[in-house]
Image (cartoon, rainbow, N blue to C red):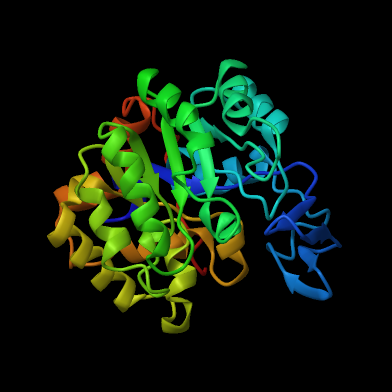
Length: 312
């Protein structure tokens, strides 16, 4: 099975216009050139070197989608890149059929974060709120009483939470208490619940809640030492399927960060080409589950990717 034979959605990717971020609300992240970024005193390759201006625009990801037969995707913000709420709304206005997007509030603010989050949602277009657990660890608890009005609003208005837990399982208990109060809250857990960073089994098992999903954004980075076949990543997908059900799992790329090590096609084709999942499971994982969760129409797919060039 190749990627153009299924309806494919990317459940975890990033876009930014001008990168200007923070890690843990204290370490600055600034763009340089040719995809390199400065984090504090360190310089790393933060995106492909072909991103000469260090901008991860909607048009760039659309080019990758169209080349690989991907119908659309979910824009998930991150403090690493800096808040991109205005740019996200611009993308939604220009490409409403291709994108869904989460708003990113300032959870470090001494002001009313819940009110800010609700105001962002009410500005129109966003499907929910992004929570960057790794940045909040040790500073803001996920079940902080100040955040309860936000969860209540999201629950009552059929909106969603995109949650990247910190490494390990410490934050899971905090969020379990949130789900005790709002058992039907819609949640997408990022980075495949951190299987290589101590997140399993608790981060995985939280998907037993009725409306909690897990998406695989960044899984090829977590298993990058294996090379493009990613056999342990496939084993992780199988284990998650066996424990919480294939209907709970969504494919994601973490574009453009993971494209420093692998191509977009490689981040997709290791699933398309595996025999560890049957055709029905692949269709669910690659796009069917995300279409249901985010309200994409599976009849509005992207154009077929062009055929590969063959040596002549």
